[in-house]
Image 1 (cartoon, rainbow, N blue to C red):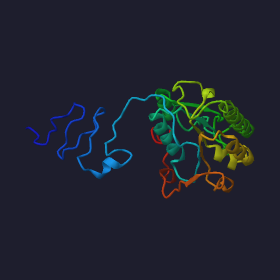
Image 2 (cartoon, rainbow, N blue to C red):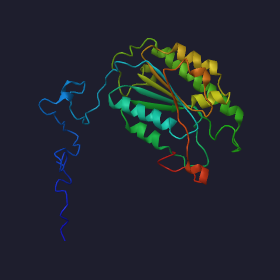
Image 3 (tube, one colour):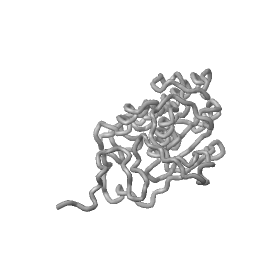
Image 4 (tube, helix red, strand yellow):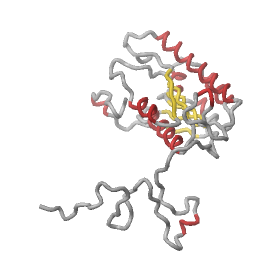
Length: 256
């Protein structure tokens, strides 16, 4: 039997839909109709389409963002911005604190694999295996040592970038020392809340960052009051309901 609703454009890019729109073919941009007021907007009324990624420079970077709270999604939001920036051709580096691995999940992280395949994004990890404050057999002193090592690494990167023009395009596959337009310090707020790093050291990092660097800080369940005035954006990711509360374990593809 033939399905009367079969889409004859299956398998083709940019097939027409019933209302005259397109299905988002990567090479198509829908031009605005004559007289469309959207044509006078910055986007010109043109429907966005995927384009090749080439080195570019942001025009308005330089703010400090803090993402904290007891809800799931802080790292997810930060990495989402990292991928968005990289999609525009901007250089992004991610330095993770705390997350060195855990026996409760497999030795794989989906975000690491995705970053490795994405032009313009690099990452490194300063976390210690296990999780601080948990009875998982790891040494708390090692957690502190790795966290302090992460702070030193962040200082070194910022110092190296003082001589880099962050208003210019940067090589997408360059070394982190060669510069970045966005730096994500993932879980650094969590490390500071747990006294693994001194909050004053984090404030010092903010003070010493290049003017044109977008700095993104994540982590922690307790409100980081000391970051309120130092940040341009503060988001509290609040939990209303979480499957962990019902005994669910971390799931591949959502938590790791």
